[in-house]
Length: 170
Image (cartoon, rainbow, N blue to C red; front, side, top):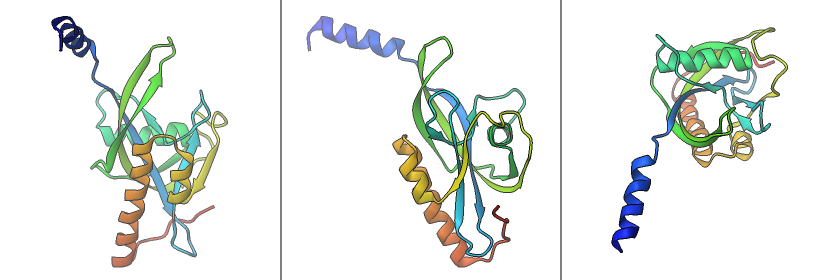
């Protein structure tokens, strides 16, 4: 490698920014009769792609609390959010000023117990309850697809070993 190429590579590394941090909720419920797991997908406001509720860090809030807050503001769902992340994924976000930044999203499982009739972003997104397999088909981010598959496997194991309370599906 020439000295000039090496310097250019070093300069590029110096200006590369770490990914911006976001927190998300993988919202789920169990179908009442079949005990099948359903996950909540929604469309993004800008591109219309299928996503899960997520947002930026908030002052004086733990990451799992931010995930739960975003789930309520964006999708109107409340429930029990786990304090441990189930994983993370990365995606490129275009900010309002047009700047493109890489984001790392830590994901927390949220078992939905209540769906609000009114919430902050009602009408701004399309919401759908789908199977984990359907979620894998709809989302674009490969790492998020993998999280849905891991979550499906985890839930299958949990449901086969212990009875759980059922959350009514609408």
